[in-house]
Length: 133
Image (cartoon, rainbow, N blue to C red; front, side, top):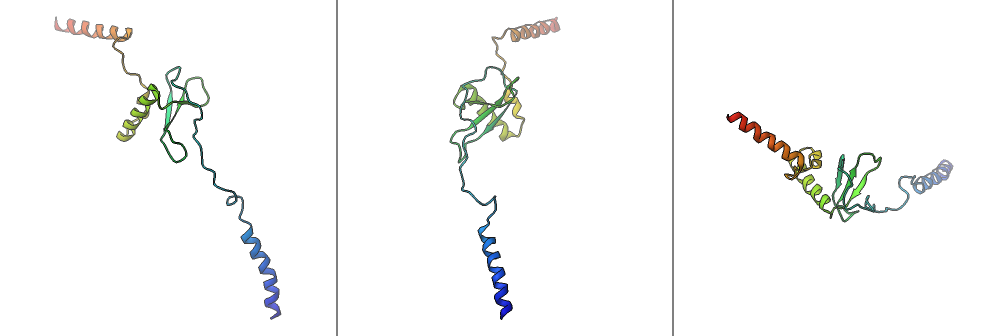
């Protein structure tokens, strides 16, 4: 009987310490996350090199567009409600649905009024005329 009392005297404090010590990972309360882009730009000053779209989630009520520009070490945030942001989100959705590379969204569409495109079109028509003769 004496052995049982002495073992209880040793095991009881150890058990109490085990339940009271929850460790560093368990202590604390849950703090919800925040949007990663507190301040956004309406458009980028130059063509982006790469981008990432974070869709809406429980922590942030808007989609977030993070853009990597040439000469900048960090990612800049682009407004999802601006013209450039809407175009990137629309392209990102289409590309991710089809399983293609997202960098194709960064290519600018050819502007027919662009001087270089006019030169290329003239060259093509000239070559077609030369081919017919």
